[in-house]
Amino acid sequence: MRIPDEDAKPVVTRMKRAHGHLATVIRMLEEGEECEDVLTQLAAVNKALSRSGYALVATGLQHCIVTEGPENVDRQKLEKLFLALA
Image (cartoon, rainbow, N blue to C red; front, side, top):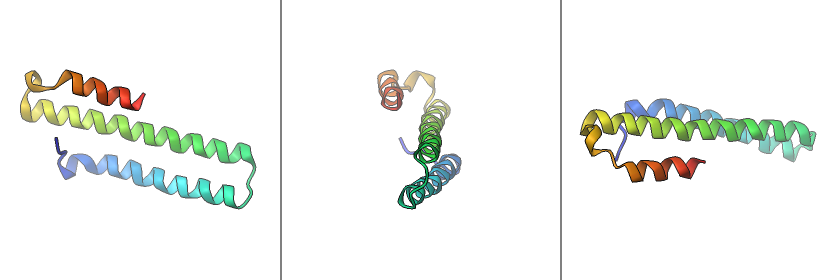
């Protein structure tokens, strides 16, 4: 399944924001910032990426239901996608 660009845009925006935060975490580590501060920021990046994944699955599910109908959603495939994020 391919998600239309207009539906994927909010997910891409989230991922780009997380990418910027990750660059900050790397810089902090390279500059010798306190471990606690680096880990706090790394946890925020991790959470942002997880939320991006959930948003991607939700967007994909909505797209499938709207375009193909609920009876054509592959339940096993969807479960596998959710478990990949767990």
